[in-house]
Amino acid sequence: MQRKFIVGNWKMNGALTKNEALLKEVANGVAQMSGVDCAVCVPFPYLAQTQSLLHDTPIKWGAQNVHQANKGAYTGEVGVSMLRDFGCDYVIVGHSERRSLYGESSQLVAEKFAAVQKAELSPILCVGETLEQREAGTTEAVVTEQLAEVIKLRGIQSFRTAVIAYEPVWAIGTGKTASPEQAQEVHAFIRKRIAGFDEEFGQALCILYGGSVNASNAAELFAMPDINGGLIGGASLVAEDFLAICNAGQK
Ligand code: PGA
Image (cartoon, rainbow, N blue to C red; front, side, top):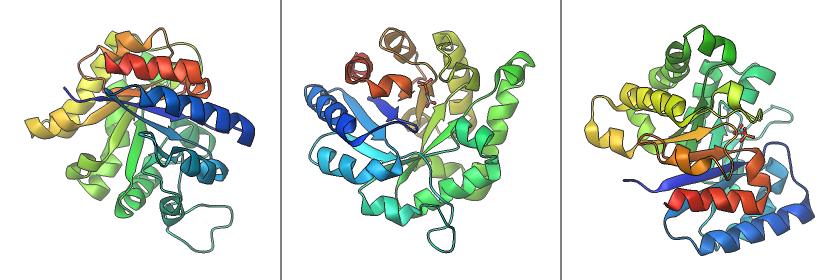
């Protein structure tokens, strides 16, 4: 069984002094754990601080978004080579907040995914349905569409160096977690969709669950066979909570 992968998504939160305390505490805690892999995706302005505090720890880091072009006249945007300059290994693409608040289409998300891979970083591709879509019974169709643009642009093999995060939109920041069974069902569907043709590839595919994961529900979610870890929002801002989730990933 592959090691669990726990990724913090700070979203638009942080402050220099607070970050330092949080990152040091998390790094110290994770250094005591040997059975889990961890990363944090922080706001762009804190990448330098994160790099300097984490570079000699087992924790990796990354960004939460990137522009699809590498450089140019795109005022206010950030290109992937800049993320490389700060030692990022991961970039979240297609988070539901980007899709819904900034109108990012699956096609744009696929272009960002491609940009990240071309720079030899790993995309963490978020997919997931809204409550309306779940109630209408279209969860699988929605996830299939979100994956389809990436497959069209990059091919199924591109998932060898990518992470998928299943994040039902109705569970993000709401305190309403998908039940382990609900999450497992979609994870199994995604694994089959991406890797149905190759057993070994399927086993290696890392599919995280995200949406109100906390210290008390992490263990039961991680016990599901197709859940390979978590993408953690709110709880990644509190060292004790994030460490408890990382610890649950060890079991
Ligand atoms: P949450 O966010 O853990 O605060 O629900 C998860 C995410 O949006 O990645």
